[in-house]
Length: 260
Image 1: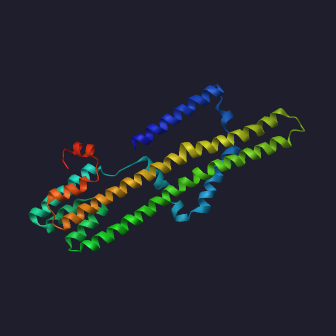
Image 2 (image 1 turned 180 degrees about the horizontal axis):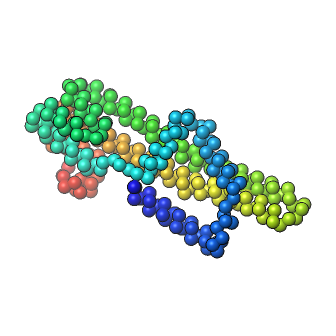
Image 3 (image 1 turned 30 degrees about the vertical axis):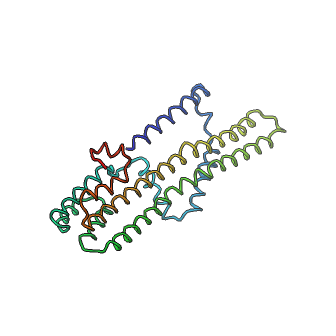
């Protein structure tokens, strides 16, 4: 599990739980409103269904899994792996990489190296892999779009819930029933709270984390592409390494024990 996401969730839940307890003195039910849940939660989800095709909606569990669990290989390991293959290709010929390619679990890297071993031109390799990167970007945009919609329209539906509660409250003023008025006012306030929480504590952070993961993966793919093209061109292993290290800050290069 992504440690940063877990820490953030625990801090947020802990702080909100403490504040709710202090304000309600343990009577948490005062913060619950089924009308507010239906208005904000149901309304926000309905917008996502309206704005996005069904095949994208079905991928939402995968987006959440990507938010909580990150299985990508560290950049340093990728660099070391490609650098070792570069040395092997320079020493024994590019065809010697066939056994190494079979052991790889990254499909992008495996596909690129296969094309290089098969003798594809650098232009073909680059254009094919860049199309894969572009398609990946579009898939990632769909994932972020879902949470952006919730972030955008959640507070709006909270406002609608607030207005509904106020209308109900004003409609009951003639009866002067303080209990009914209090219920309507609670709906008005709680709906706004739900909208703010769902936008700022749930959808917003998830969308931002997915965008960051996407940019990291794109950079990783670019790194692999440069390494593949360098191996295919028969570059000196040192030159291949230098091209890949360019994607890392100097502090990151020092941690790898490699000088740029």
